[in-house]
Image (cartoon, rainbow over all chains, first blue to last red; front, side):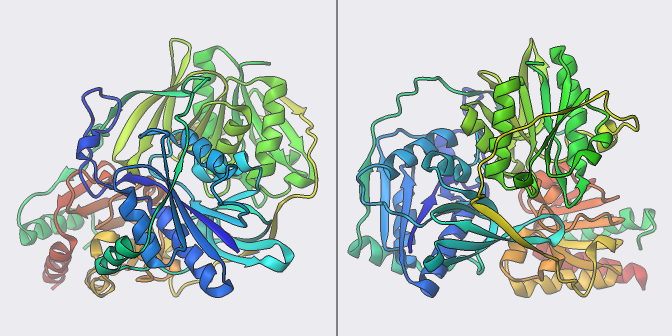
Length: 261
Length: 325
């Protein structure tokens, strides 16, 4: 099995997000970037498949701040190869990222043939589309998202996956390989890799580079963000302030007034 | 009619979804703004009986094919793309639910049309569609326009009350809208797996203490259990807590989990991402505890406290026990 995992760097929302001076984007200088959560699960699922069925896991990411750290971490976790795509420019939308990835995948970067492409079901910045179906469309492969289990059957050239539906219902699907799967969550929580191991990977392993020409956008942008803002305070909670014991007392008053105590 | 507003009528296991009616209500506003008609697009196999419930639309385009019996994004997007090429809608509203997710993006990709994901609302400004999209886990919202038609809007649940999109009268017109689809399907549903009934049904609980990432470790779940016991309720959690294995799958609230409607929903260490909020909207009282004053959960909660859940949960347990004597 040749498994390709697409990692995307997205702003870490644990940090405060600030709007840039143009009022239409995030202040990039203040952003801390991290691998999109769904992509972390996609990597974990790929590593689990490799452990169970053998194969080779390649991680692929478009250039972004801190992307090398993410790629070395993936190598330290057990990925076999890491490829960073540069030249396309920074801060691309998801539609453009999908086109860049597709151009690399049909080019001579020794990434093909591939049996499975895994990435997160969605990223928090997928404003102009989801990556997995876009890549599937460009590669002409079948796609399914919101997947929580992946079991390939290389002999039959199929993969059996479990997709989540509302209310805890799940669906078991059979998909022809090669396929693009959007992972919601891996079968196990993403493995932890100690910093020392990542440092070791930085010394012993390397990241391959794939250079693409900058995107000549012939069609112009498909969507335009005209304003970015923090959600309005309308309908905001009534805030209770004070030390824990005092806050607890006030919450109790609210509960008592509603007959909940 | 070209330039109409389309709503992809989501149905699953024989029933139209709530979001279909929410989308129809939104679609009606957009159609009025554009001076066009509202079409509900019903894809499936032997689904025409559902068309009668879509009276909020001016017309139902009924597209039936054996390959559309179960929703797989590839085939649904292909059918929609064929219909869109024939009929040139101005807007297509596609739900971002676990059933339909992916269809809108694939459709946009096939049509090389603009897609705007994560929409919570949309309106018509000077003849153009302007969407309000929620990004970064609910922390940022943005106003977005599409450069050309059709604009494919990916819609979160909760944009309009579903009631506003229900009409007892049947639609004025139901039209057959055939497509040509090539078998065999490359994505095939083999079976549904019903949820294992947990030891409790959280959707029936009156008091829920919900924990999220802010609870930090499995050991700390106990703090929530103690408070739930004092209040006579149950513990549930958001996705990260379930994924970590700290709580059973039957305790998950949100998109892939349960939709709850308790008298009290106390959210501790839950940021309030849209996927979670969609499951708690029917709660009578939401109290949120989060250490991040910017956490979007405070936009949903009735009462909030900026505090570390690990400090406040024990204090609250003690205060509740004190009151109950």
